[in-house]
Length: 379
Ligand SMILES: C[S@@+](CC[C@H](N)C(=O)[O-])C[C@H]1O[C@@H](n2cnc3c(N)ncnc32)[C@H](O)[C@@H]1O
Image (cartoon, rainbow, N blue to C red; front, side):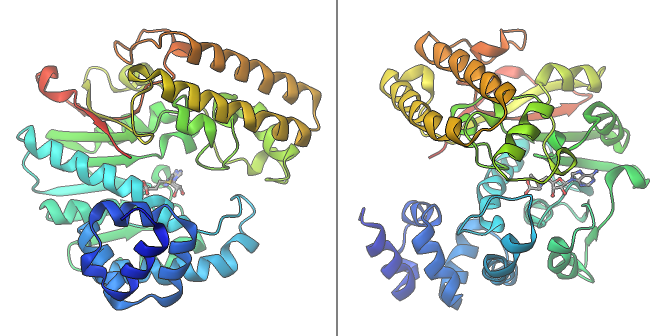
């Protein structure tokens, strides 16, 4: 079945018959989403929960919050672009990557036991997945934003969990953790090296730090930067990025721009030394690796080219026009060339357009890297 409206109908009438593949497609479709959200039907919730391997009451909460979010969040939260689908479902993809990474850790022989800490735990997906695989005591911290309140409340009083609505730097969370997770948080932190050192200091002697990070130079991020949805934004440095967002009326001032420069693997390795930093997984959200398909590359190029005129029209600062043209030109040139390799880390950064996002495992132990690097192509 390829017709999305048929999928949506089936989702509502007989959700058990919807395959994971079909559901994945439905999750990416705004119209279907709106429908699923509008009904918050119990069987749809059960189906989503089974797909995500997460508790039904949590999925129910997500759906309810998403529904509410559509009516109030985007009117009050000026940081975010307007979107039909709510923020929570943008995190579904993230949660899947984390679930996969936790499974990979187990394949490395890292036994899920003891204490786990999730830095910038957001809605709590990470904490739930850690519990699912077997960590006994799970904590997380997240900035105290009203948006996260229902999720703080969800974990309040739940045995084995502690969701603390506090800044990671404001508290001492103790030590002795066998796992610390940090997913897509470092680009929001002004001193990622300091954060990495603090996370490492929380580990027990056999402990592992898992860092998951999208790649800001990957074609999907360049096409649509994940925080503001603006083509080429992910290639600009912080100040220029903030100015572009101001030009586009997405933020009132530079202080409201929430994204810093993404850290590189080399920077993370430097901060983590002498701990070993190894790539556990790579993934690309765009289906096929650019390096394997020239048609795919041409498709990305044409999408980027068609995004440019509209963007140019909306930019009012000459400096930003020039900066966007420069990065766009450079990026397109790279798309025309043979892309460089993702690893080793000292490869020219501009040649890394086809690098997918990555999951790093940081620990005292060194794992055999041949068993670690594992490319995952995710639609
Ligand atoms: C892109 S979200 C990722 C959330 C979650 N880890 C996930 O993958 O769904 C980044 C989160 O980091 C949080 N964050 C940023 N700086 C933080 C800090 N200093 N302490 C705690 N959380 C922080 C933000 O509030 C935001 O919710």
